[in-house]
Image (cartoon, rainbow, N blue to C red):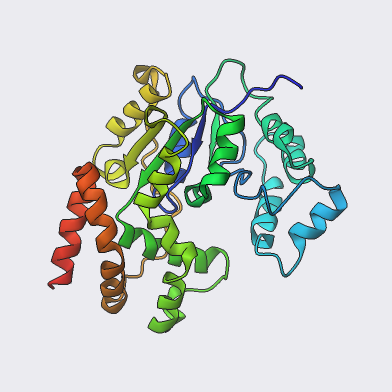
Length: 296
Protein backbone atom coordinates (compact mmCIF):
# COMPACT_ATOMS: atom_id res chain seq x y z
CA UNK A 1 0.00 0.00 0.00
CA UNK A 2 1.23 3.53 -0.83
CA UNK A 3 2.51 5.64 2.04
CA UNK A 4 0.21 8.63 2.47
CA UNK A 5 0.17 11.91 4.34
CA UNK A 6 -2.84 10.99 6.50
CA UNK A 7 -4.99 13.64 8.23
CA UNK A 8 -4.08 14.46 11.83
CA UNK A 9 -7.50 15.80 12.79
CA UNK A 10 -11.14 15.45 11.82
CA UNK A 11 -13.60 18.25 12.57
CA UNK A 12 -17.09 16.88 13.14
CA UNK A 13 -19.13 20.06 13.51
CA UNK A 14 -21.55 20.87 14.87
CA UNK A 15 -23.39 22.24 11.85
CA UNK A 16 -23.72 26.05 11.99
CA UNK A 17 -21.31 26.32 14.91
CA UNK A 18 -18.50 28.35 13.29
CA UNK A 19 -16.80 25.44 11.56
CA UNK A 20 -15.97 27.55 8.48
CA UNK A 21 -14.51 30.28 10.71
CA UNK A 22 -12.48 27.58 12.45
CA UNK A 23 -11.23 26.18 9.13
CA UNK A 24 -10.06 29.57 7.89
CA UNK A 25 -8.23 30.31 11.13
CA UNK A 26 -6.55 26.91 11.17
CA UNK A 27 -5.20 27.70 7.70
CA UNK A 28 -3.50 30.80 9.14
CA UNK A 29 -1.07 28.76 11.22
CA UNK A 30 2.25 28.09 9.43
CA UNK A 31 2.40 24.57 10.86
CA UNK A 32 -0.89 23.59 9.19
CA UNK A 33 -1.51 22.74 5.53
CA UNK A 34 -5.03 21.85 4.43
CA UNK A 35 -6.72 20.56 1.25
CA UNK A 36 -8.49 23.14 -0.93
CA UNK A 37 -11.88 21.91 0.25
CA UNK A 38 -13.04 22.06 3.87
CA UNK A 39 -15.71 19.31 3.78
CA UNK A 40 -14.60 16.05 2.16
CA UNK A 41 -17.73 14.03 3.09
CA UNK A 42 -16.02 10.67 2.99
CA UNK A 43 -17.10 8.91 6.15
CA UNK A 44 -20.77 9.85 5.84
CA UNK A 45 -20.90 8.36 2.32
CA UNK A 46 -19.12 5.05 2.81
CA UNK A 47 -22.28 2.96 2.48
CA UNK A 48 -24.01 5.22 -0.04
CA UNK A 49 -21.14 5.68 -2.44
CA UNK A 50 -18.98 2.57 -2.85
CA UNK A 51 -16.06 2.56 -5.24
CA UNK A 52 -17.37 2.50 -8.80
CA UNK A 53 -16.49 3.37 -12.36
CA UNK A 54 -16.33 7.07 -13.14
CA UNK A 55 -19.40 7.23 -15.38
CA UNK A 56 -21.53 5.40 -12.80
CA UNK A 57 -20.37 7.70 -10.02
CA UNK A 58 -21.10 10.84 -12.05
CA UNK A 59 -24.55 9.49 -12.91
CA UNK A 60 -25.19 8.73 -9.24
CA UNK A 61 -24.07 12.16 -8.08
CA UNK A 62 -25.93 14.13 -10.73
CA UNK A 63 -29.23 12.23 -10.55
CA UNK A 64 -32.19 14.50 -9.91
CA UNK A 65 -33.46 11.99 -7.34
CA UNK A 66 -30.20 12.00 -5.40
CA UNK A 67 -30.10 14.06 -2.20
CA UNK A 68 -26.38 14.62 -2.81
CA UNK A 69 -26.91 16.33 -6.17
CA UNK A 70 -26.83 19.90 -4.73
CA UNK A 71 -23.59 19.01 -2.93
CA UNK A 72 -21.99 17.66 -6.12
CA UNK A 73 -23.03 20.66 -8.20
CA UNK A 74 -21.69 23.03 -5.54
CA UNK A 75 -18.31 21.29 -5.53
CA UNK A 76 -18.25 21.30 -9.34
CA UNK A 77 -18.96 25.04 -9.30
CA UNK A 78 -16.25 25.60 -6.69
CA UNK A 79 -13.79 23.68 -8.83
CA UNK A 80 -14.04 26.40 -11.46
CA UNK A 81 -13.46 29.19 -8.93
CA UNK A 82 -9.98 27.94 -8.03
CA UNK A 83 -7.41 30.44 -6.80
CA UNK A 84 -4.29 28.65 -8.02
CA UNK A 85 -3.56 26.31 -10.91
CA UNK A 86 -2.54 23.28 -8.74
CA UNK A 87 -6.07 23.09 -7.33
CA UNK A 88 -7.55 22.02 -10.69
CA UNK A 89 -6.22 18.42 -10.69
CA UNK A 90 -7.02 18.11 -6.97
CA UNK A 91 -10.70 18.92 -7.60
CA UNK A 92 -10.87 16.61 -10.61
CA UNK A 93 -9.37 13.80 -8.56
CA UNK A 94 -11.77 14.55 -5.72
CA UNK A 95 -14.82 14.46 -7.98
CA UNK A 96 -13.84 11.59 -10.27
CA UNK A 97 -11.43 9.38 -8.33
CA UNK A 98 -12.19 5.87 -7.08
CA UNK A 99 -14.05 6.31 -3.82
CA UNK A 100 -12.10 4.27 -1.25
CA UNK A 101 -9.61 4.68 1.61
CA UNK A 102 -6.66 5.09 -0.75
CA UNK A 103 -8.51 7.85 -2.57
CA UNK A 104 -9.30 9.60 0.73
CA UNK A 105 -5.69 9.50 1.90
CA UNK A 106 -4.49 10.73 -1.49
CA UNK A 107 -6.42 13.97 -1.00
CA UNK A 108 -3.76 14.96 1.55
CA UNK A 109 -0.69 13.76 -0.35
CA UNK A 110 0.29 17.03 -2.03
CA UNK A 111 0.39 18.96 1.23
CA UNK A 112 3.55 20.14 2.95
CA UNK A 113 5.44 17.20 4.51
CA UNK A 114 5.45 17.27 8.29
CA UNK A 115 2.53 19.71 8.49
CA UNK A 116 -0.62 19.15 10.51
CA UNK A 117 -3.56 18.51 8.21
CA UNK A 118 -7.19 17.47 8.36
CA UNK A 119 -10.72 18.25 7.28
CA UNK A 120 -13.96 19.52 8.82
CA UNK A 121 -17.22 17.87 7.75
CA UNK A 122 -20.05 18.77 10.19
CA UNK A 123 -22.16 15.84 8.95
CA UNK A 124 -19.73 13.51 10.74
CA UNK A 125 -21.24 14.54 14.07
CA UNK A 126 -24.30 12.41 13.27
CA UNK A 127 -22.41 9.24 12.34
CA UNK A 128 -23.47 5.98 13.93
CA UNK A 129 -20.96 4.02 16.01
CA UNK A 130 -20.29 1.55 13.17
CA UNK A 131 -19.27 4.43 10.90
CA UNK A 132 -17.14 6.02 13.63
CA UNK A 133 -15.40 2.67 13.98
CA UNK A 134 -14.62 2.92 10.26
CA UNK A 135 -12.95 6.27 10.95
CA UNK A 136 -10.94 4.76 13.80
CA UNK A 137 -9.94 1.75 11.73
CA UNK A 138 -7.99 3.87 9.26
CA UNK A 139 -7.19 6.88 11.50
CA UNK A 140 -6.73 5.57 15.06
CA UNK A 141 -4.47 8.49 16.04
CA UNK A 142 -6.64 11.23 14.56
CA UNK A 143 -7.73 14.03 16.87
CA UNK A 144 -11.43 14.86 16.84
CA UNK A 145 -12.54 18.49 17.00
CA UNK A 146 -16.12 19.35 17.99
CA UNK A 147 -17.57 22.85 18.44
CA UNK A 148 -21.01 23.21 20.02
CA UNK A 149 -23.58 26.00 19.98
CA UNK A 150 -26.77 26.67 21.92
CA UNK A 151 -28.89 23.99 20.21
CA UNK A 152 -31.94 26.24 19.79
CA UNK A 153 -29.89 28.88 17.99
CA UNK A 154 -28.06 26.16 16.06
CA UNK A 155 -31.29 24.56 14.82
CA UNK A 156 -32.74 27.88 13.67
CA UNK A 157 -29.51 28.85 11.88
CA UNK A 158 -29.35 25.39 10.28
CA UNK A 159 -32.91 25.74 8.95
CA UNK A 160 -32.19 29.15 7.42
CA UNK A 161 -28.97 27.88 5.87
CA UNK A 162 -30.56 24.70 4.51
CA UNK A 163 -33.45 26.56 2.88
CA UNK A 164 -31.17 29.20 1.38
CA UNK A 165 -28.39 26.93 0.06
CA UNK A 166 -30.27 23.72 -0.81
CA UNK A 167 -33.85 24.69 -1.58
CA UNK A 168 -33.09 28.27 -2.71
CA UNK A 169 -35.85 29.89 -0.70
CA UNK A 170 -36.20 32.01 2.40
CA UNK A 171 -37.49 31.03 5.80
CA UNK A 172 -39.69 34.13 5.51
CA UNK A 173 -42.02 32.35 3.08
CA UNK A 174 -42.65 29.30 5.30
CA UNK A 175 -45.68 28.78 7.47
CA UNK A 176 -44.81 28.01 11.10
CA UNK A 177 -46.16 24.46 10.78
CA UNK A 178 -43.85 23.84 7.83
CA UNK A 179 -40.90 25.16 9.85
CA UNK A 180 -41.75 22.72 12.62
CA UNK A 181 -41.91 19.82 10.16
CA UNK A 182 -38.35 20.64 9.07
CA UNK A 183 -37.05 21.12 12.60
CA UNK A 184 -38.62 17.88 13.84
CA UNK A 185 -36.82 15.98 11.10
CA UNK A 186 -34.01 13.73 12.32
CA UNK A 187 -31.55 15.68 10.12
CA UNK A 188 -31.93 18.79 12.25
CA UNK A 189 -32.42 17.22 15.66
CA UNK A 190 -29.47 14.81 15.40
CA UNK A 191 -27.02 17.67 14.81
CA UNK A 192 -27.99 19.28 18.12
CA UNK A 193 -28.23 16.09 20.18
CA UNK A 194 -24.82 16.65 21.76
CA UNK A 195 -24.99 13.93 24.43
CA UNK A 196 -25.64 11.28 21.78
CA UNK A 197 -22.92 12.67 19.51
CA UNK A 198 -20.37 12.68 22.32
CA UNK A 199 -21.40 9.26 23.61
CA UNK A 200 -20.95 7.78 20.13
CA UNK A 201 -17.56 9.34 19.46
CA UNK A 202 -16.24 8.74 22.99
CA UNK A 203 -17.27 5.09 22.70
CA UNK A 204 -14.69 4.71 19.92
CA UNK A 205 -12.03 7.40 20.35
CA UNK A 206 -10.21 8.00 23.66
CA UNK A 207 -11.33 11.20 25.39
CA UNK A 208 -7.83 12.69 25.23
CA UNK A 209 -8.15 12.66 21.42
CA UNK A 210 -11.37 14.70 21.46
CA UNK A 211 -11.37 18.51 21.63
CA UNK A 212 -14.54 20.27 22.80
CA UNK A 213 -15.09 23.94 22.09
CA UNK A 214 -18.05 26.29 22.14
CA UNK A 215 -19.48 28.82 19.72
CA UNK A 216 -19.56 31.31 22.60
CA UNK A 217 -15.76 31.18 22.73
CA UNK A 218 -15.66 32.33 19.11
CA UNK A 219 -17.61 35.41 20.18
CA UNK A 220 -16.02 36.06 23.58
CA UNK A 221 -12.44 34.76 23.42
CA UNK A 222 -11.46 33.58 19.91
CA UNK A 223 -7.72 33.87 20.66
CA UNK A 224 -8.07 31.67 23.72
CA UNK A 225 -10.06 29.09 21.78
CA UNK A 226 -7.55 28.89 18.94
CA UNK A 227 -4.53 28.74 21.26
CA UNK A 228 -6.19 25.89 23.14
CA UNK A 229 -6.83 24.09 19.85
CA UNK A 230 -3.31 24.66 18.54
CA UNK A 231 -1.87 23.13 21.71
CA UNK A 232 -4.26 20.19 21.33
CA UNK A 233 -2.95 19.67 17.78
CA UNK A 234 0.66 19.79 19.01
CA UNK A 235 1.36 23.23 17.54
CA UNK A 236 2.97 26.31 19.04
CA UNK A 237 0.17 28.88 19.59
CA UNK A 238 2.69 31.72 19.90
CA UNK A 239 3.54 31.77 16.18
CA UNK A 240 -0.03 32.22 14.97
CA UNK A 241 -0.07 35.35 12.76
CA UNK A 242 -3.50 36.60 13.82
CA UNK A 243 -7.18 35.71 13.63
CA UNK A 244 -9.76 36.24 10.94
CA UNK A 245 -12.61 37.88 12.83
CA UNK A 246 -15.08 38.38 10.00
CA UNK A 247 -18.39 36.56 10.38
CA UNK A 248 -18.39 33.61 8.00
CA UNK A 249 -21.32 31.83 6.31
CA UNK A 250 -23.96 33.93 8.04
CA UNK A 251 -27.62 33.16 7.36
CA UNK A 252 -30.25 35.76 6.56
CA UNK A 253 -31.16 37.87 9.56
CA UNK A 254 -34.62 36.62 10.54
CA UNK A 255 -35.61 36.36 14.19
CA UNK A 256 -36.97 33.02 15.35
CA UNK A 257 -40.78 33.16 15.83
CA UNK A 258 -41.78 32.72 19.47
CA UNK A 259 -43.92 29.65 18.73
CA UNK A 260 -40.95 27.95 17.05
CA UNK A 261 -38.66 28.95 19.89
CA UNK A 262 -41.07 27.51 22.47
CA UNK A 263 -41.15 24.16 20.68
CA UNK A 264 -37.36 24.06 20.37
CA UNK A 265 -36.94 24.96 24.04
CA UNK A 266 -39.08 22.00 25.06
CA UNK A 267 -37.21 19.77 22.63
CA UNK A 268 -33.71 20.69 23.76
CA UNK A 269 -34.17 21.31 27.49
CA UNK A 270 -33.47 17.63 28.40
CA UNK A 271 -30.34 17.73 26.26
CA UNK A 272 -29.09 20.88 27.94
CA UNK A 273 -29.80 19.50 31.39
CA UNK A 274 -27.56 16.56 30.46
CA UNK A 275 -24.85 18.80 28.99
CA UNK A 276 -24.98 21.20 31.92
CA UNK A 277 -24.49 18.32 34.36
CA UNK A 278 -21.53 17.01 32.33
CA UNK A 279 -19.70 20.23 31.55
CA UNK A 280 -21.29 23.21 33.31
CA UNK A 281 -19.76 26.28 31.65
CA UNK A 282 -21.51 27.38 28.45
CA UNK A 283 -24.13 24.56 28.40
CA UNK A 284 -25.20 25.69 31.89
CA UNK A 285 -25.55 29.25 30.57
CA UNK A 286 -27.59 27.98 27.61
CA UNK A 287 -29.91 26.14 29.98
CA UNK A 288 -30.36 29.27 32.07
CA UNK A 289 -31.16 31.26 28.94
CA UNK A 290 -33.73 28.67 27.83
CA UNK A 291 -35.43 28.83 31.21
CA UNK A 292 -35.57 32.62 31.01
CA UNK A 293 -36.93 32.51 27.46
CA UNK A 294 -39.58 30.04 28.55
CA UNK A 295 -40.86 32.48 31.16
CA UNK A 296 -41.02 35.51 28.88
